[in-house]
Amino acid sequence: MELPVMPPVKPMLAKSVSAIPAGMQYEAKWDGFRAIVYRDGAEIEIGSRTGKSLTRYFPELVAALQDNLPDRCVVDGEIVIVHDGRLDFDRLTERIHPAASRVKLLAGTTPASFVAFDLLALGDDAFLDAPLAERRSALVQVLSTARPPVHLAPATTDPALAREWFEQFEGAGLDGVIAKPLDLPYRPDARLMFKIKHERTADVVVAGFRFHKSGPIIGSLLLGLHDQHGTLQHVGVCAAFPMKRRAELVEELEPLRMDDPQEHPWAAWAEESAHESARLPGAQSRWTGKKDLSWVPLRPERVCEVAYDHMEGDRFRHTAQFRRWRPDRTPRSCTYAQLEEVIGYDLAEVLGARG
Image (cartoon, rainbow, N blue to C red; front, top):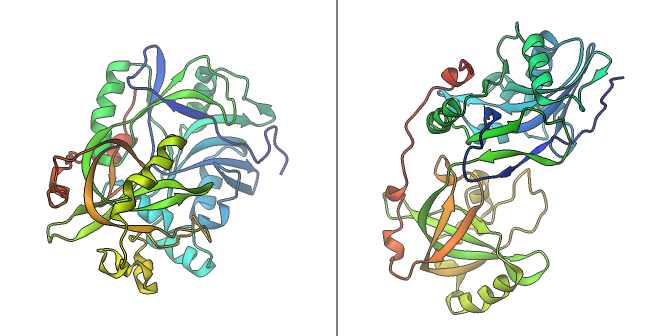
């Protein structure tokens, strides 16, 4: 492979802002695997956000990219899986599997798509220093005949339409809106774009914690909600505390530590069979590998309010943010019923949107 932009390249990133800024290009924020695709004739390489190769996990995309991309190019985009008209991140994570036979099976049963939104190189020309407007124009031209599962990401310069997308597209599993300055060059690993994400709050039960990797201070709190049967389900974690607060929380939560973890609602995490679902807080995953995921069970008696962007099934898709303790709420009152239901929106309508 010999291209003007060679792997590995870390993608350009975005920083969070609270409102959609004016005077930019706007796109949907896709909830998938960020990927930079390198094509040089018959050779295809799919690089992840960390620079590691994703090529072996998506063999069906290799063929589709060969059919739809220019002969020599580097394209930034997102790998997604669509199920029942919306993005499905859980099915996407299943594709990262060590067994080639499993990868081949899933490529047939849950095929992936690639949504392209930036152009880093074309032919012998690197586009890293070109402004976004020029890169977008070239990308639109070279993907004018692209067919599924390769898609051109919809984009607009109309902030009113961007606000409409922000409200509507979430129903298809998208993550918000990305705003990009029109004169912005492509700068790998730099947070020069802007992301506007949905934020909601929920009252949740604190049922355990993990220690921080740096020592005996809180790393994250394990959160739960009661389902319709009254069972406390693990829904995610909250983290990002200042270091001083992490130390204070250890002492604050000490009275809730359980002498007999077998009495905890999530005691089954110790059973190997329970880890197969990856729902319980003691489970390993293909992402964490051998990372220590041991946790300290707490009596599920304290409630806190957290901010979250959206749900993936019955769990928080991303790490939640601690807001405050809620001594006025009982753990039993923390149920899924409090969560906002997002109106469904067909992903096909998103991919067909035009600015």
